[in-house]
Length: 260
Image (tube, rainbow, N blue to C red; front, side, top):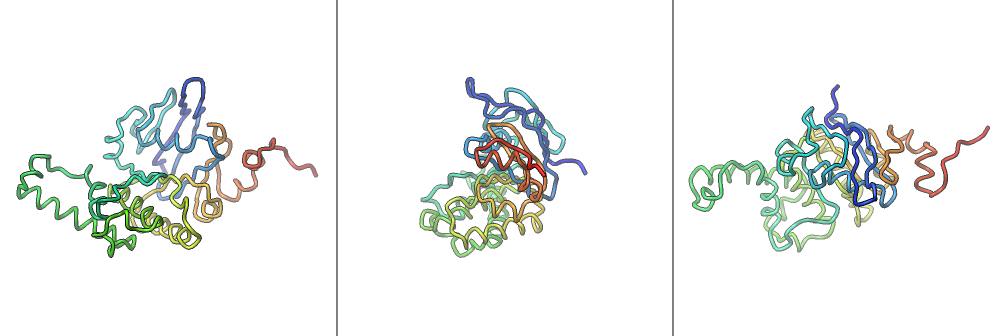
């Protein structure tokens, strides 16, 4: 099976600092692929590259066989890459429905003038998108809050809206940056279950950056580990847990092999 996403030798520099140093891995369709590593390992930088926010110094990124290395963020979104951010990027004064409709913007064909004049074609298109927004809200248990300002929701609720807005883009690949950060245990369990359902029911592949190792190990099909911008391990959860280089990176000790 061909990879949905492939990175080869990706390098990002900020001055003399290499934020990413030759990162190479692939994401298979229909999987939850997690990227983990200590603070400053380059995880968020990686997501910024994949979503078109940062440009690479070297290397190549392909999505569905298309080179997106230097593609604009809006074009990458239109290809089917959606992203939910670590810091909630929602308008708190707007309703949940209005925020989800913003996620549909890239899919709308009606222009600014047609929407402003409320032309019949624009009205019909808006109705179709609103129906889809209601379906997504219902899927994430947000239907009762569609008319509520996002700022009135709990922190966990706002994080769900952030995920819902990313799903409103109809992505083939969903990039999630620490989706359970700041959540309590019950909320974390809910989101873990939700991601599995998203994978199976919506046919959306997930690339997850997360610090919660219990969650990562329980839902991931494949894990890539970054340390100081380099990929130091790539494998299934069981292998990652036992990898000396990974243990060393998290504990801050050199990787050594056990002696008999």
